[in-house]
Image (tube, rainbow, N blue to C red; front, side, top):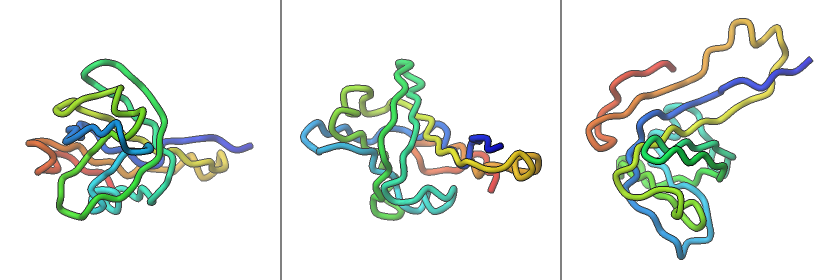
Length: 120
């Protein structure tokens, strides 16, 4: 049997921009993507802590060190600059693998400038 577990999470990422005219996705500072193992174009589940919206989109890399978390296209209707997000990916694995699995997570603060907590 396969189970679907949390693979990576970025908690309290602050939205830096929202662009309706872009065709879709969530731009994420590529250094943070690499830190938790989110791949370019990977599906992400996003929770907005400011308004409770929860949605799926895909991650696109923003320049490393830019601190960017930009909602694009339809996702731009679900948040605004300054909102805090939870960004998650999941992975299928066997029940045996799941027994020892640990997701890679970071908690951001200070306008995405600091990693307050990390489990990688």
